[in-house]
Length: 275
Image (cartoon, rainbow, N blue to C red; front, side, top):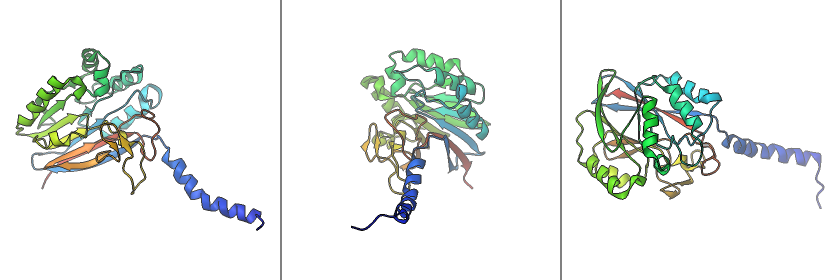
């Protein structure tokens, strides 16, 4: 039997170190900012969007100051809340700190995710968003102007709203024909078949939580609600016909289990004129 020496142990430790470091780094929950730049002939001047979703009452510093400061640092022209900011199964204190801390920074829009609906008091959730200056979109599309740029912004509520109402909203958006640069906020990324029949330039979704576990360059997501194992739209930039579809990885830290190489994410989208 070969004798194990201190040299053998040291060599094994050195060999194992990269694996250990890779594993430890994968569990980091440090707040990440993902940047995307999109071109459009419908845009005359650059616009910056911050997209936030799936907070699930996660904490980012005292009174959410880390998250709030990160949003302020990138200086958005408007903010989009993509659902599951307010939740059904825990206090919403941290969510309120976020909404309060960003109140008045810039225009803000939101749509209900499955957890806002599951509170059983969606009207109260909508009133809370409104109190902090956020315009709730309820299966409708508005025409607005931000920094002199006309925009059309729609919000598809989560299908937990009820089959009849959800079907009505889908029909509305599939018939809608925008004239300006248009954005659809819809919590669920898996509704690709429905989105293909719509005419929006940009679709923003959350819900997938980045697929929970990732291996950079190999696996973009292991499991996502609504998509199951190895989801097609866990997080990132995708296309649906002529539309861009951005799926945020969300801000939750432990909801649905631990995250691996999938830190909580702020999404920053720059829409620039196509030259």
